[in-house]
Image (tube, rainbow, N blue to C red; front, side):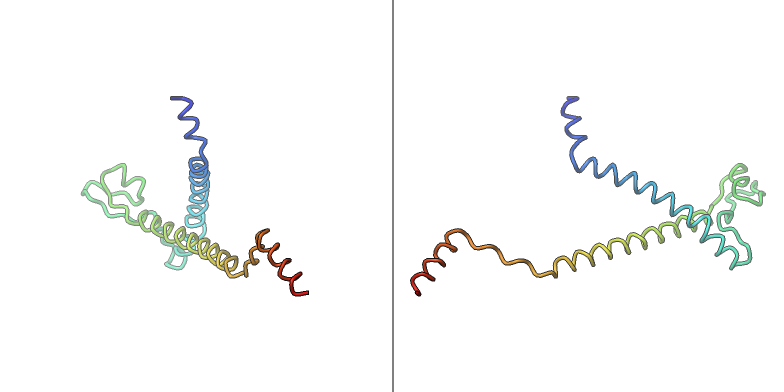
Length: 137
């Protein structure tokens, strides 16, 4: 069973999937930093210094905190600001992936548009062509 598992784990598809997951996690971290450290502060500055991550609606009367972390300690809250930030993350990731796939498709179309070399004639066709040419003389 161990040998069978090793054969399964070393197949190309499994290794490719593992590499994709690792790269995806790193890409996700980059996008999270882009949104959290660059985009959201700009949006916050444009909206008068608002921080979306602290937008929430308390679901109980016991919540009186002014920031999300303290509000979660006091009771249930609906953290729609965090959801908004994650939605912006998703939109950016989807857009970047769209651009990457679009670029790949463009390159693929250019490769397909190149004229293919005509196939080389078989040995029989070459021989028959030589015989034809000799007979013409």
